[in-house]
Length: 327
Ligand code: BEZ
Image (tube, rainbow, N blue to C red; front, side):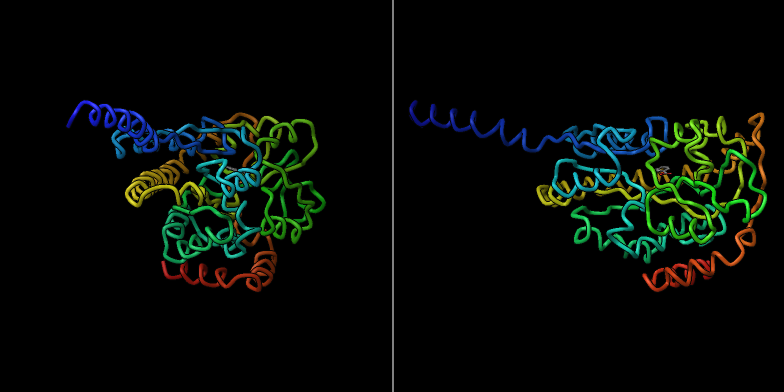
């Protein structure tokens, strides 16, 4: 190689190589509605470590917690355009785009959190994920959860009749709205980030919530009555923007899939292991009145009514009920 050829080669390498290296390096932004203390956020941080080691340091994660990027609906749109790389969202948010996802919110579908974990790891639930790219422009990698839903109120709720006319905060989603409307409550859909203030200023009377969030936010400070209903599981879905996904090599897609799946699994395991202890933590809170083990009977015909209405929207209500009956 003469000097001229060598010099040209150096110039070409200098122009191409840094670009090639830079193209392989990637910082993934992950949006969440939950605060940094939440298990989801802890697992997203841990996912950053896993991604780093699986990619030999090429991949990292920056989390955007507490709805910094907007509501879950806005994050879903950002995933669609590729403005956001990844998000850990409630499945509730996806129900408007994928009605089958509503079946994961079937009231009293599961008897306990162990069964919730089995449903979320089932083939039936994974089948629903396959609809994600077409319906949302995002790839659904896996599910996790934030435990089981309970009810908390400013005034004690001693029977289903006490729910009548109550302004009940719900996660914005049609299957939630139906359930509370059928009970005669006035559903107040609002994002997680607004719940504490709305309770504090009396804008709402009651909330449906999980132990993790109750403890993280201290909702009992303004809603000192807890009904242990376990009336729904509350799943999360880990999403990657379809545009971002399409820009990755098959090898890098495999790395991303493995890292996300590892931390979905860890999240599910942590909720299964931690749920009983969180309830004990709440039992120790002074001034919190708890009615334990409120079963399905408390809600009269509402669960059957909900099933009848939602079975018309999706056959997954019956399929998931059959699945749980087989456990
Ligand atoms: C909620 O909307 O209630 C919620 C969202 C994410 C995690 C926990 C709760």
